[in-house]
Image (cartoon, rainbow, N blue to C red; front, side):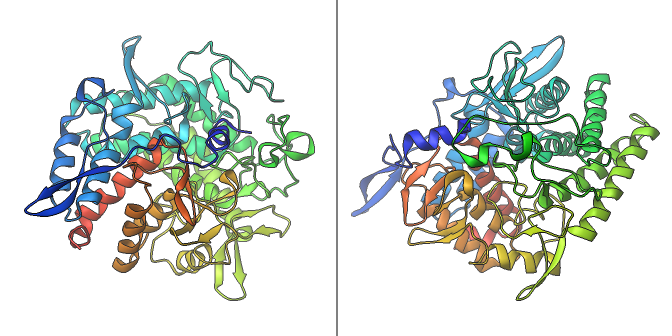
Length: 478
């Protein structure tokens, strides 16, 4: 059982320790709710960005629903308030980012948590150093082990999962191979570079990490053998174990990259996880762009990234798309190269639903819209609809649990005002009087939730509201 699921089990989805979200007072003769900030006191915040604070005040003042404005104020800065640990090591900025209630840094989560703050780095030198520190720390993690998904700040710390049957090393929290773990650091580095033009942090160590990413992708294409990675765990939880001596079920090499685990940290059924392969196609393009510049020029690296990208594209074209009898041509969730496919979606990103958010497909693409109809319906076994809300969950939190993240991504990727407003209303109604997003909640009772401190979901919610503020401000006044 993974560290994240352990929290779910011990809390039993019960919302232990929930504080009342608001008080009431009489204003102009009416009894009205007063929403008190759930942020830490200023002196206890891990990091403060003036540009982020100004944006919070500006956006909140434009939101007509006081509860929605309060949620934005609590959630958007949650990563900075509570999860970042910045310092300078050997003359370089270094930022360790925990995921919330687990003291470990996931490559995926740390990028996703920091990503919404990127637009502010040009005007905020202090925040720019923080982001550079995350990029530096991620390169260190990749160089320690490109197959690991989560790491400790202390390189000597021994994990509680030290007995997993895989090549565990000190400093690694968990060693689950997930394609997206190596995609996300590229996304962050590329996003930072595009906004700033700064290449000063992309030194020999970072470049070495990028070469290791390409090597790992190549190994997991499994053209010639199964590669060096295996994983097994002594557990009764099926999705934490990997069958057939830790290699997973067989695949037919076709250019796609094997992902032994999903971004949920659950093992895949068919090892070619299509959303993550589509994310890989996108970031391989980023590497080609960056290493074609005068400052970073490396023709050999560009050629290798392009070759892998073309092979993954071909594998996707031949194996990742199929015709659904009701919805037409759609994208598979997982395939094996032999013709088998898995029809579902999971709440974690990359997911089929989230593909436009990652730049992997256009939000108005017919292929995407067909796929979206499937995953947001009863045709997806992990789409739930209850009295509390509707959305996508996954095996990680069990049946009948909806992830706010899936509702947020549904709104972020939607091109329909009514759907976006519907999602906002659900998010306001399902925070269980805590003022924050959670990992999951029961479809019929939002007060039965998992993870009351989950910074990725909080910051992603803030990113959604900020996107609406810039693109569809009228929805915040409705």
